[in-house]
Image 1: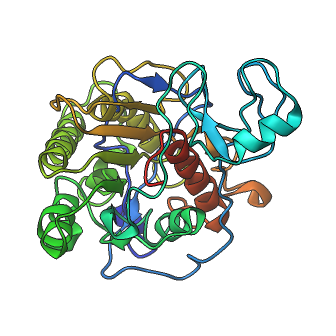
Image 2 (image 1 turned 180 degrees about the horizontal axis):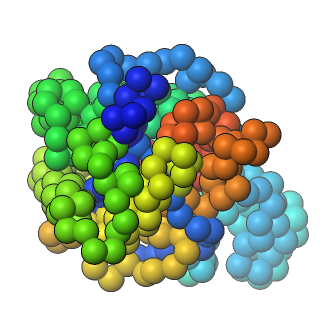
Amino acid sequence: MGWHSCVAVATLVAAPVVLLACGSASTEGGGSGGMSPGTPGSGTSSSGSQGGSGSSGASSGSTGSSGSSGSGGPSESSSSGGMSSGAGSNSGGTADSGASSGSAAGEAGSSSGEQPCVKGQVKSNEVVMLGDSYMDVGHVGPTIQMDANATYRTYYIAGAALAYGSGQLNIPYQFDSMAVPANPDIKVVITDGGGNDILIDNNQCLNTPVMGDTSCHTVIMSSIAKAQQLLQDMAGKGVKHIVYFFYPHISTTTGADANDWLDYAYPQAQQVCCGAGAAQGSDLTCHGTPMGVTSGTDCLFVDTRPEFVGHNDSSNAAAYWLMDGIHPTQTGANAIAAKVWAQMQKYCIAQ
């Protein structure tokens, strides 16, 4: 994300502008929302990206269908298809039996007939990361890789936008003209995007009220349309899983109306990723089929606003997770990456 006023800080890359909306499969409960973008600039930034990762896998010790809980890796949950650690036996087996099934890390399906998570089917070079400064300057890209203990192909750069920018500063370009030509065998794409469409290219919207304005609504709709086109393009080129995370609320010192525009864009982005039937709630995290895609590709949309509740107030330095009012500190990046990775584990994406 990057507001013109913040461009010097770090070209913001993720504003609440465009975004994907995941299908109608499931939504995660959570807190309130927000938005943040990237800053313009050239080249990726790696400083601080190796900070603590804070990954969050499935919680250990959760019980199976009726047996006692074990402590192994995650396995499919019978209620939501998610992953939980240590699935117990159907007949109420002992803790030992729960532990043994949990160690299979999801390779044994749940009692409700969920498909097991077969590990090792996606190679690290079949996973591509795109996006803006949240991935780059904000350390989220490197931190997700740390949580996954993998090295993915990265094309993100600070200042990139969805409907604006040229070359690497345009996220669709990162996919079509960089990632695909380098190696078209892409199974998973992890990205953010849309923040800079407002923060850099239309930063007058940062201090424009949502009600009554039309030009900023047009900006958001253009970005959402570009995001939908990009997801359809990815599906057409053989991508099986798309992971799209949106921005948390940024500091109000950056723009008085920025978070209102982010919240306005959130449900529209969610539906682009998960489909028109995606459930609504305080946390719009969901998993489904992208709009305009019939089958073969799913999209995971991750709402990062709940994690930043209480952490975007610059007057509370001890709990503040934004380094410049827009980009997350390493602690904030840890929180975002942990949620993204946990959701990827839940839906067996790049495992």
